Length: 336
Picture 1 (spheres, one colour):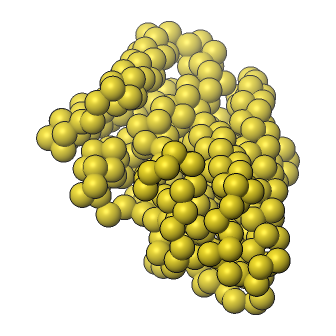
Picture 2 (picture 1 turned 180 degrees about the vertical axis):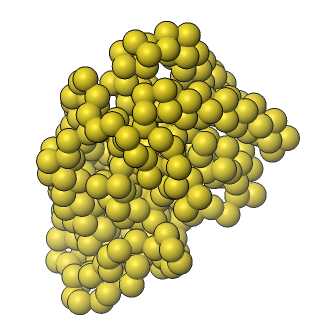
């Protein structure tokens, strides 16, 4: 979730430097990064296995319709589904902290062009270069589930082995999958190294919160409304189609709660009533999203319902952002 330019402005905070203890933010970040890296490593291993098999048959993908291929691709998908939610649980921190924000661009939010374009090119085995391919979770998702036609091998295959033709029953291009999985693993490790060297300040944490919380409606719900989770087969999205953006939002809200936990004692000491309002607002937003996720597991929301829920969620986020901005001011951290 790359923050829109206007929403990044609040991250330019001035004022006091270090809070009493923000070590919990780093602990939270490192714990989920460890899970992300574990998933990324497993994805890399499965992609390497698939690539080696494709190379062995001269990239004759028809010859790859085997049980061994199914095992490798199922392992790759499972690994992606481990790494991606782990990242969503820390994205609220990564995207909002200037020292870390480029990793959010390259891992989960960047596009192929414009001011939000990723900062890398993807070099495939053999030397082909994909210029600014978009973020790595998106490239690997589009390759593993075939939502990006250029990343498919052009051969149908029953990946889940249920004997039916389902979403994603395509063999991926082994070169793209290997290159993207390698890059995802490398970027995840680099993020961990950078995060471990980072010393959080109140400006960092307030900036991440004030910059991220307003994205509930214009980022998460907007993506969700155009996805198969709302539109079904009418959706033409190529990313955020395997895991609902409501689940992604659930992870982001958890990161906001973890960040505020590091600020809570300072805010409470200065304004106990304001702290109570912020804590309650975060808790209520988390519970609201939890309810939506639970209901989505049982039925699909209509576009009209999604619009109404977006308004309600954004109203909550707007109130919460105002209170966080007020708390920053009360502590001498000026939001510009």
